Length: 313
Image 1 (tube, rainbow, N blue to C red):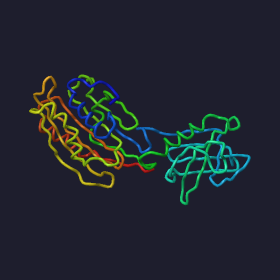
Image 2 (cartoon, rainbow, N blue to C red):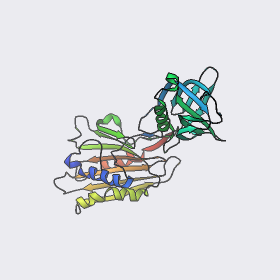
Image 3 (cartoon, helix red, strand yellow):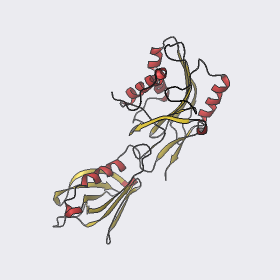
Image 4 (spheres, rainbow, N blue to C red):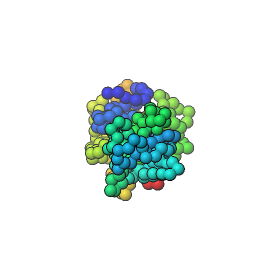
């Protein structure tokens, strides 16, 4: 199974093993993230314009002219706008049902990017109209529409994990992402990602359709850790949260790894939160046999304050 990102240091083996379990759980490899909007890749902001585009409505019959209007097509995360002097079409992203590729009724010659939308259902076809219809960007129009509107989450719904730590006390040591996950690892100022004493990890995964119960998910994450250190790995649940308007489930837990040479002793406190479309994880780990009681309680309090907020604008 392929992975993305850097090679983990030897004394980060517990974290690396957890990633392998996550990969098995989701059927994809998870090197992971901080915020994922509903519109695809983390942090993606879509705005694409095509200057000369043919528009054909689904109810247009046979005609020597394949299109009804030629104008500019603008695609954003909120929807699409097609316009020319005599005709304007606006389609809200929430109305879009499907994006397909193919021929349209009454036109057996041209291939179109076809949008089905609205109630009752309407159909709109778009084609690169440059070079008298011989332009080559119709496939690009189609792929842009697919990327913008055919995702696992409704448009305009974005989830973020807020709180949980003071960013002024940390510096980014490493970050990486792909279309399904992102990870950001923070270290203390003056430390490096391959030589840290304290590490803060923020990650988010695109949630599968039928995820494991959150306690089972945590247990599966650490199966490899327990096998790696059968006599030196301890894990327990600290608290579980109630379902809220923005969170389906949450859990705070900790694990300790001791006397597992050549790996350093480690003690981690972490929180996992199930949102509607994302799974967030925020974790603090220190290379120590056991966190001081006051530091452990401080991080439990900080993690309890980390909440999912939603942007529906």
